[in-house]
Image (cartoon, rainbow, N blue to C red):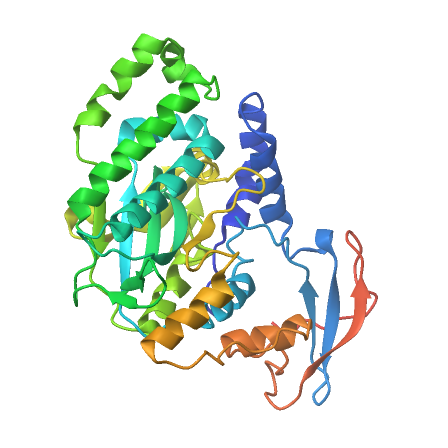
Length: 400
């Protein structure tokens, strides 16, 4: 029998109590809730049900999920449902992937002002695309795109950046034509970078003047206007990192990409290698050395600290749509785009009226939760439900 897979929950359960005690003064309520949710996920503390095979009689306990968006175990169904919704919005054109990244000194401010600066990052990157896309010297069209906020690098350090998935063209100002970009080329990234820098810094200075930013610890001196201006001086003179990856080519590749980037958490369980003697070892890609895969060892305390850096503010929407993909006019404008491109309306979007999570999971992922894992012929049927904190009355035999 293979080694049982290590999970973030295991690390939190073993080292979380000491971490809470040592960092009681600085640990936020949102971070505490995330830790508790991950620790309790799929345990008796959240309740669950017992299933039994209708052919061989095999029984298993299925504990309920925490459904926290930071939990590595709770994203597959949400991701699959979101992807199905996006599949219905794809149009038959080339797609591009553009990434906007905050410089290090601005990212430090973002860590202490997450909601304000993450909003700025999403808005400034989107406005940069829309501005250059609408400029007749570049494309002269209204774009439509999806943006996804990530706040981490492979080493779990704070690295806020936005991934944008953009069709290679847009609607003409009068809505009568589809304006396509040049094959293989979207928009000039050097121009995007400068507009992004200007828009973001304008918003940042405005927020500072309005007293909407907080500074503490190493950044406490930035409460002074002169110190704040001096601190941001270099950021106003350097090039901000904006780059466009090679185009996807078609809608199928876009969905494949999105399946890797949406609903992702700071680290997945399959990257964890070991936990012993107060240390955690995990895999990471070192992009400074060609993306080579190697292992990193952190103390459990440092691992938890880095993981919690990426807890988002409550209710913060980290995936957003803009332009002709914006929520308000999406259906109407997508129909217009398809008409102008000479393609049919997508029929890929299946009904979501059935609320049984097992049927939805199989439809969306192709993997069955009903098939018996022992005999492979029977189906697992629920025979008992038990409440949080209690245990099932049904005796489940040990099949290990």
